Image (tube, rainbow, N blue to C red; front, side, top):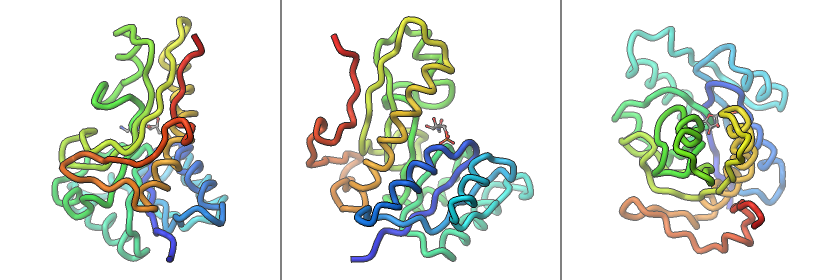
Length: 216
Ligand code: GAR
């Protein structure tokens, strides 16, 4: 069977994109990166993707008068590259209902918190303000409500007493780099199918090495 063709949407550093690109270099990984698309011309991830020989396209949202025309071009580029699954990796644009519906069940996202906690922005600041001891990251299907789609995989990350938002974000980001390829493999293998906004995955959390807790 052929590999699942993905398009990765980025807006910034591109470190999750790079983790996926590296995972795809393994011959047995069931995914190939057809295209990386950035909505920001100056995103660091653009250079990283090009350095790795990936088709890289910029669709600058600032050049469009409204979201639908921006998304029409985005969609056209995804179609041109025969993308079967869209992977949002630090893509910081809100998508319209039409775009979300076009890719329903075929678009996933990574969020730097243990959803449904801390949807939206500034997750780490809010986690620190609440004094939580565990946070983490989530890969989920994209649905109409932001950060509310069916959860595919999560990794837990400890919050340490000396943390600030930057140190916590860095620890969570490391976990993201393991979690995203893990979740992507499950989607590509057909193990992470959504039904009624729930993904029931037949897998062993410990064998998957995707749960991190402090040693007590
Ligand atoms: C990651 O932490 C990702 O989870 C987050 O942006 C960062 C992108 O880093 N995404 C969101 O907050 C989406 N709401 P990267 O560009 O280095 O992958």
